[in-house]
Image (cartoon, rainbow, N blue to C red; front, side, top):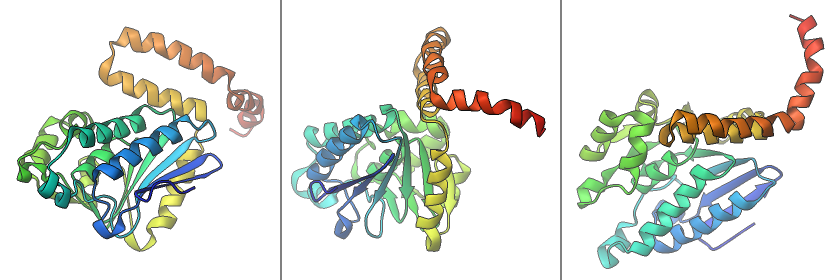
Length: 253
């Protein structure tokens, strides 16, 4: 299904793709794109059919970050910033597994977008960096997200120098989870998406929720929340099937 020109959403069964669609600008972020992205993310989050979401960019790049043409002529409005951060936050809080498919340029807001996803798959042609400091800015909420993902020292190194990484370098520090060959990117991405899709939906959503609580909530609060999440998992049909299948599995051990 097509939305505003800047973002394309496709839903196929329990899978959704949210694609940035400014390929002539390497999917650089302007006000229209971040507003459309927030709307698209909210729509996918509310769709009960969807369990797996892939976020990607059309054309040669995932996302080249802030549209510097816009920045040079208009600056950066608070509307832009708020749409961007609200859209990214929806990815973090939706009860679905969100996978970033990173290829080509992944700079600034592109890194922030990828960091808001649950899993990051990087092409061998990816160039990853946070050059905001070179424009006299800080990279949005990346100083909040990245230390949780890769540690404070590594986050500081990337943010304060603006240097770029290859996908392999990003994998070594935990910023990319899977590196796949650029010549076979879509096929290998599909294999990885299938692997994550095999996780029972209730269990995957509960795991995501508890991982988020691990950063922000005291252990007791997280334990209390886990009890209700566990009850929901135990009611799911996948658990009933696993219990019924156990006797046969046990005899094969």
